[in-house]
Image (tube, rainbow, N blue to C red; front, side, top):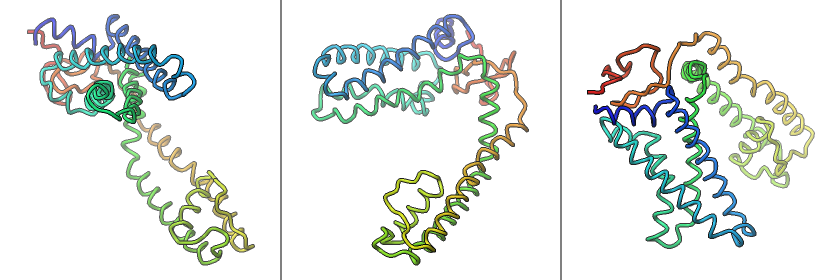
Length: 270
């Protein structure tokens, strides 16, 4: 990789240098401003007065994001790795609405895609000094995904059983008009959300509902306990924000010369 491309890659994809940190901070502020402008544009009274200003601001931000998107493609060895990556697709989708508005009518509904820019904040958070801690959390979530999946499946079975039971206990006047609707009520009750659109009227139904409510408090704590237990098993590893210019894998060990994912040289400046 040429030296200027290597330097560009360090600034855009990493945060170990002062320039890279400044780039990420500016990008973070720009993302937050963009989401703020989209929110303000949705308020009719504000949009009626400041529509032109908001439109110009959004165009400036869109152009900046477009330039950033192009630079990200240029600075990597294999552009397709970035273009078809999760963040590459997010970057493209969050930039397209403004350009589509020039050639297509009725694209105002696509403005919601701009909110996808918030997902980019997760990539920018690497500029903090808690990279190793975040890796511990990610590993804990991955390690506990099977246990959480089994737990969710078990909860779903309970909701089906209790939902069916409530359908048999209550009548249509209480709102339990079908088994799916009764299951919906059970999910809302078990998660302690409690919309109140459906409520049991019979003493037996209220007894069952009380048991479901009490059960809900215990069930909510289970996923947190699973993840916390896995986190206690993980040990933080000293990593940096260095991203591989070939496969874009982030977070390598301090002093690493080769990518732990693809095995290629990390600082190929030739």
